[in-house]
Length: 240
Image 1 (tube, helix red, strand yellow):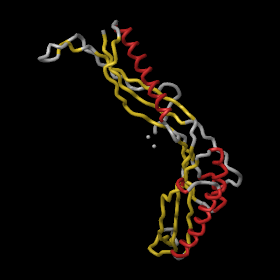
Image 2 (cartoon, helix red, strand yellow):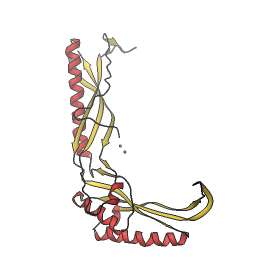
Image 3 (tube, one colour):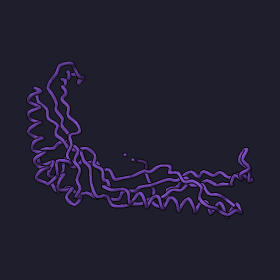
Image 4 (cartoon, helix red, strand yellow):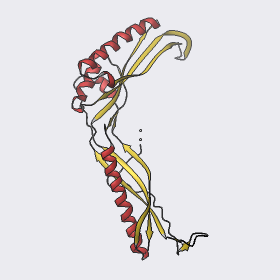
């Protein structure tokens, strides 16, 4: 569900409205076709995240590719050792990128030439942190261990199902309230619900840029914020 900006309270969505002007009959069956009204409803629910996902790695450069690779391997082994010391399980660490690329020299004018001046090696891992109280210390330890490349970090929920249920309930209430408003304005009553379809769900979660942390020496202060899950539904009522 990766996300548009969300406003507090009920999210306003486009309202779909369809009603038959008079009661008709299904072709060839003589069965009355009920008059209906279809409205959309939006609901949202919020909760504090309980895990974080971050990307950390090492970038090294040297004149020879073997030298850059050796330096990178030493640094990454230290990063892995630090993660193990912090109690991060192996299942929460996954290599996400590895690259060896030539670096080209520049001429007197600053233009890149075809002459190779050295090589760059980058190795990155995705790390899941399930104890947010230790997140600042983990970031600080990673940098201290030699990680010189940190990507953006986002906060998620291990189990979003309860939050989804709350948002769906709020969306249904919103749809019924809208239908009641139109019923009062149109001089008709709502009958039973004939159909419900979910229009989509959107999880908006805090994303933090970790680049400034590379310059911090103390434990990194982190604010987790809240995750917001919004759901849209389309509900068709019979009208009387």
